Length: 285
Image (cartoon, rainbow, N blue to C red; front, side, top):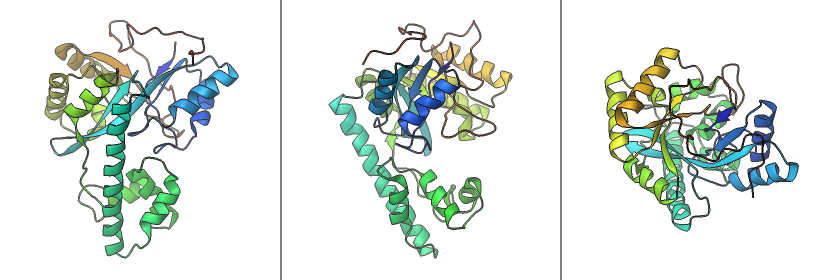
């Protein structure tokens, strides 16, 4: 069974519609997929509708990825099996969306101060109602020739310490874990090796994530080495956590695709160990 528990649609900073993401997952032989857009659950209903309408052999896991603050760093927490209709949860996500807008306004102001005008209207149009992220800013700046690549934009304008960088104003990590639990879900520390932390700080992050009530660590992501996977699983064992897998899919690239290279060895306890996975069956509406 091929399982991918971390993916994005154009409801946040992915490039595919929810329906397009479902089609891609089917094409790549994925059996179980979690859609985990940034601070929004808007893509879940249309994705499930596409599965039901076409009777596709794919089980959808309701998910979200919440941007959080920890030690003045931005840390992402994935929520899996959340209730996307929970009123309290939706209100909390709305507060994150407002924080995203406030941050975007300040980013645009700083860029305009540095002779890059009219950024916010362009970014809002590009996002088209999606959760605003720095990726939208990067795509716009590439489109107007300020850099030749997304990486170039972050290195010159949007990375920490650059002219367009604005510190995050997200919910604290422990609070996000509580939000997820209150919505009936499990909390997963997303891609812990992407934060460019030293080994000491990754260990500290895992320890404090577990102490705050976290449930699992994303131990399998594309491009990780077998040694890195084993080290992350060792952290799970140390803190009584289970293991998750996720491509963090935004768009197909030469090094990443939905469901690519996601596998766990038999000695690893997966986050889905007690879930009612259905294999090649359509999830009930």
